[in-house]
Image (cartoon, rainbow, N blue to C red; front, side, top):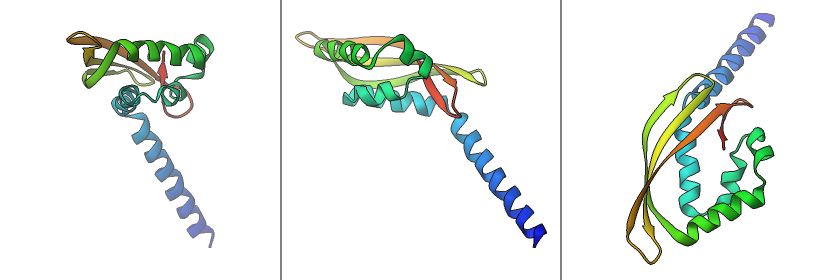
Length: 126
């Protein structure tokens, strides 16, 4: 009975470790989710993806206000990940936004998302 319990425990730990490793190994997926929320206008959910350190830097109200001002000037037509630099516990994701300026024409904006693993998963360092 002890042997079966130990085998089950080892299996559960390895599954949990594998899931955590898989989740932590993809900063690009976190960046894509963040950009998707930006495009859809869910700024509160974007804020929830920020690290606690970033939330100490910018309040939810300030964060949402800045993104609403951006939305009042531009429509995000599409976005694209240009490059991902994974440095273990930290990552950088370069992206491009294809925009339409309100009352104007097409624009393009390049940007950088910094990410870090703080609480077992990738978070945005704003």
